[in-house]
Image (tube, rainbow, N blue to C red; front, side, top):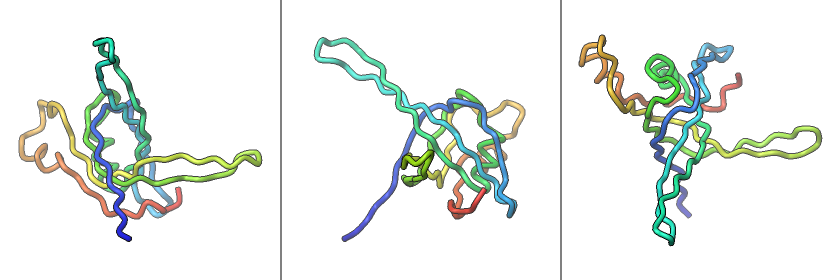
Length: 134
């Protein structure tokens, strides 16, 4: 049986980025992404729903995100789902998150950057292993 694990998300960052590095020197960051959806109810009223997704970015993708994005910035992230499991006080816990493998910067580029630098940094992909310990 074939398997396929891809997701594409467009949303806004929920907080400023805090870039960290593993003991081996690999850049990593955890970002929050808010994805807004407006839908119409059966009463013809619009309801806004927001889904919050945690995303992990690695390597150069994490560095570019830290350099160009901040709270409220729009971004497109392509990646895969990963289930984290752990135990706290004897209770098993789990959380589904996205491991971002491609980042597309959305919105207006900074005005003081020239077009070549911005276009080169606009789409960044990473092949870093997401299982590197912090």
